[in-house]
Length: 250
Image 1 (cartoon, helix red, strand yellow):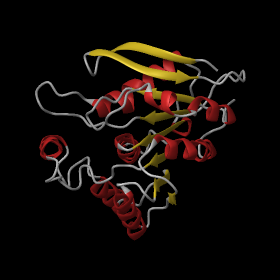
Image 2: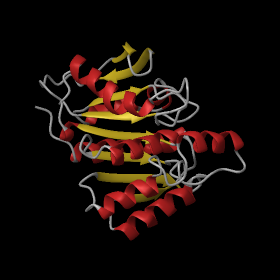
Image 3: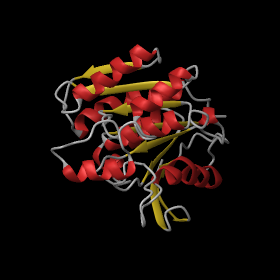
């Protein structure tokens, strides 16, 4: 299964968009798709370059897409010149994949995953668009983004105040409280974090928050830190989880 680098002109971003795509070669007419999101210092190329994602994907019949999410935390930036990453990733990328590849075009055919900033982005996009995606699985998600300002990181706090203020539309805690109040979600949710990861407590806190709300999810603490080796060890579990909650290739 060769990895294909795809470029297309994004109307949402107003520039060329890039992503890597891996399509199974098992001869089915349609496959479910896993969209896997990179971290803040990474690009659409990083997952395939730093992990054995291509090899792990041979065990599941899914299209795997690693889109470029920039550095905007997968949010729509309302400021002049800001980019609408949420609209691009949740809608435009999906539409392009489903028009160019043998991808299922239904909710049960779509899932999200990610690491660090991409873990936050995947969780946020899944929970904001529960009628569009069926499952989400993240590694060391930066779940405090949009919920807690960072006095030690003034540039991060300034970005959040402008784009994702606490309690706003990009606060995972606010999003899940609204979901619970409206009857919850049928989304399949899983997240893990290394016991030596600097985001461990953020993941524990979000886990406890979901438990209080009664939102079903799987949570696991695993050996390792905020490292690609930890992500690589967890990828088979991630892909198996997503595949179990998506429609089968046909």
